[in-house]
Image (tube, rainbow, N blue to C red; front, side, top):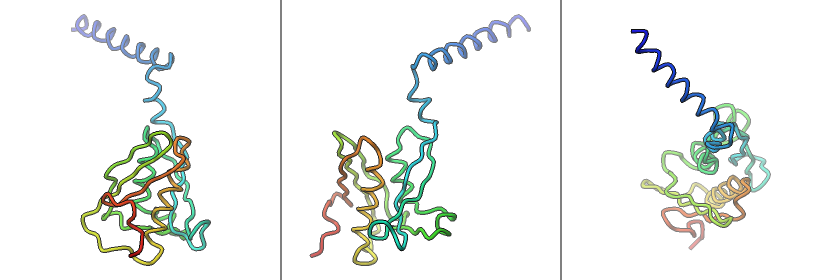
Length: 160
């Protein structure tokens, strides 16, 4: 039986060495970077805030898609520790999800979708939400402008 295990052990050792060699040569580096921690800011309601009562909460994420992860964190709302520091949600996370997100030529386009929508709670709620999305996304070097829509409507915060 030991003679059957010996070739298997050699084959596994070769795979480990080849995988290490690929990472060392820079191949597969995107996978390696995906697990490296990155500090990001998520903008939540906070009174007083830096901009229309919005302030950043800093978190560390490990992902190859930081913009999507940042928006998912925004929708999920502040952690218990962040709530103790005075941060509050902008929307009910159970009502919104990311329908689409694309970043091309510096323009981030995000469409949030909802099935159960009862409207915004307050005059500035829609404006705050859009601004929080914009601030959260503009921290990434590949984003210079942001277009936010809700169920396909980019003017969801217009009155009238």
